[in-house]
Image (cartoon, rainbow, N blue to C red; front, side, top):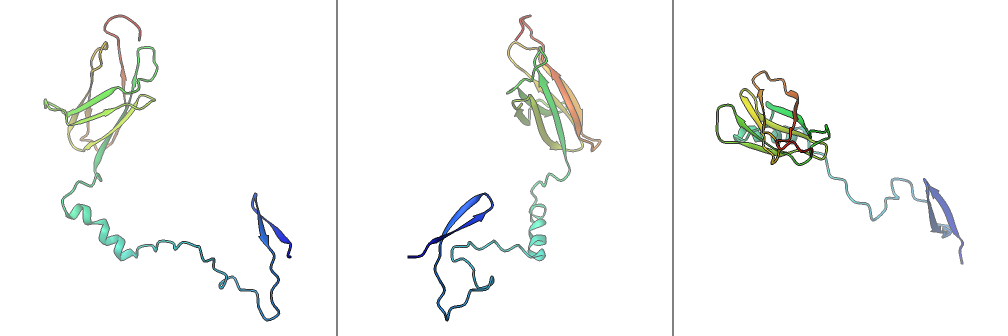
Length: 159
């Protein structure tokens, strides 16, 4: 019976049985000793394939978001805490129909991509709070850094 050998690989210990080599057998070289269970790595695409796929979204008429305008902001409660799950709706200036809608995250933050070159109206309507509206000009090409909404209670009670 052969004694197992103990190998240390990083922080893990491996217990490998020791089998003596026969006199005619040689140790395999690193290129010959490929494990049988290794998975094949996916082959990277050639640059020609990558370039062919890159233009496909614009050539078929879909919107690429390359020239979008990012509106980011934060909604606060009256006590200056973040307002999570507040519903924000966005429409083009002077339109009645809202085209975008999002909700704030747990930190009261939101971010929405809209097409560049127009003016937009951001509206927050929450029960027991006064409506808040902000206008954002997306014609400059510079994303609005931080639109801040500070909600005010309409009933006089603190929320």
